[in-house]
Amino acid sequence: MQTLNELIIRTPTLDDAPAVAALIEARDRADFDEERPIVFTGQQFRDWWARAPERLADMWLVLAGEQAVGWAAAGQEGEIANLVAESCVRPDFRGRGIGGRLVELAESWARERSLPRLHMHAVTDEARQLFEAHGFELVRYFWRMEILLDDEPVRTEPPDGFTIRSYEPGADDEALYAMHQEAFAEHWEFTTQPFEDWLRWRTTRGDYVPELWQLAFEGDELAGAALGFGQTGLGWILDLAVAPKWRKRGLGLALLQRSFRELYRGGFTQIGLEVDSENETGATRLYERAGMRVTRRYATFEKPISG
Image (cartoon, rainbow, N blue to C red; front, side, top):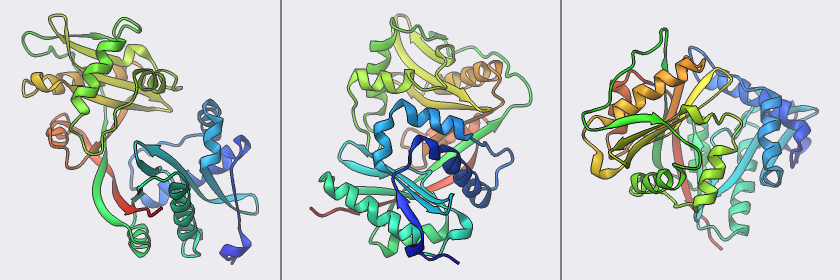
């Protein structure tokens, strides 16, 4: 059995994408009991990385020979360093210190950038114990919720006084951005993004299809939106937002149901999203009413990083 000192840790290249895809697939099959697991290919990972190749410098790959047995990627959200939730160790290589070494590398990454806090996400008891041993504290839970659609959802009408239509690129951009920032302003650890960055991140994704974005209006005023994406059999609702003044009127459920219908018509029968389990707007209850169920639970841990 190879020890940590016998393994190679280096920055990945685009050519390592298939090995990382296989690693994450092995992790998902071991750690999640999913009816229809979604498997992303090495080519998809390569395409994602190729859109921002400079981000490879913020990743670590652990190799046993040519097999990827550990991988992690760091990023920055405001003043918080964050290790992406897909960061993992191959199940049959756990218990050899790989996870601990990746934690140390992430801490050094955050310290070099003078970021005061570091977030990591656990899906197993072993990961929780690892983070606690390194001085992290549990601060939040996030859930992935999904719905499986056997038939095309019936078209539902929005509440009285509202209309829902598809997004019009360019014409809707500034109003959509402003409404989104207002809607999420009170969410936990929300960080405002410049308009250009916010829009570019959503419209340059490989799964971006503008027809999957649904917008709700009260007269000429944008009241809410559901931004859907789809790839590899999985439909994904990245943002479901309702402006504060229009809440408690059934608009969120109407947007969600319209998004389900449009994603189904686009070929996606499995639809998911991520939600803060302590969301104060009642989002988790809304998703449950719409027929969604929790399929993954991520425990978010935080550690202060000294200079």
